[in-house]
Image (cartoon, rainbow, N blue to C red; front, side):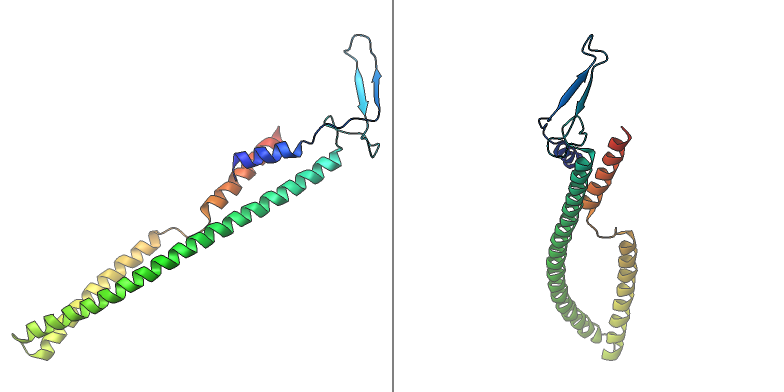
Length: 176
């Protein structure tokens, strides 16, 4: 919800012109001093140029802002749901692949221990292979931790950016 939604909201706030009950004109001479007094058709209160009172416009504006906020929240929810589904599917597939890789690695470790056991004692072969695996695991864990620190926090980026753009445009239009 960016500039287009705020522009649509601004045009929705401008109501259609209603027919006034009374139009009073003073100074009909040259037209320079011509003033027009328009009253609302149902309330008899002074109206804005478009035909609705300021209170009606403020009420309509507050309704539109509330609707805009609800739509932004709904967008954020949809983004988080979509992101959650993708993350869940990715984690499931990654976990399945990791489990199969673990079984494959266990077979390779067993083969390495058996192969090294032909040169040294079986317990020493298992110790050497185990120490090597722990060293590789430590390096991988440190690299993973460094990558996690670089990762951005997950969030509804489009919705947040849309709300920021809406607030900026509302502030700019309020200054005019």
